[in-house]
Length: 168
Image (cartoon, rainbow, N blue to C red; front, side, top):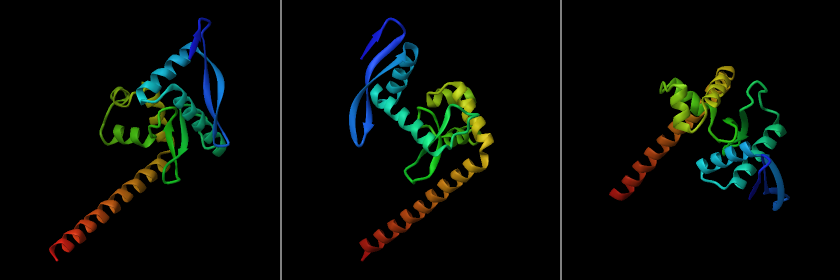
C-alpha cells in the first residue's frame, strides 16, 4: 500500500467477482484512508477486508433500498437469521445495542462512544434512528429476547434429561 503526498492513498482492493477475488486500485483521500485504517485496526482486520465489508454493506443497502436518507451513518444488513438489522455504517454495531445501552443501562452518549469505539455523532445518529424507528427496533429486541428465553428453557430441559439419564 502506498500513499502519495497529494492527499490520495492508492492501493489494490480485492473485489468480489463471481466468487473470485480480483485486484482493484482505489484512490482515497489521505484522511479517509487513515481513518479507515484506524477503524480496521480497531476491528482487528486488514484494511482491504474492512473496505470490502464496507462496500458489501453499501451494495446490500442499495439493493434492498432500506436506508433512511435522514440517517446517513445507519444502514441495514442481513443478520444470521435472515432478518435485516440496522447497524452503524462500517462498524457492525447494531442500533438496538446502542438503544439498549442508552435506555436500559442509562449510559450517556459520551460513555456509549467510549464503550463502543464510536464518535458521539455516530451515537447521536443511532439514537435518533432508534427514536424514528422505535416500533421496528423494539420489535426486534422483543423477538431476540423471546428467542433467548426459549433457548434457555431448552437448555434447562436438556440438562434435566441428561441428569435423569445419568441417574438410570
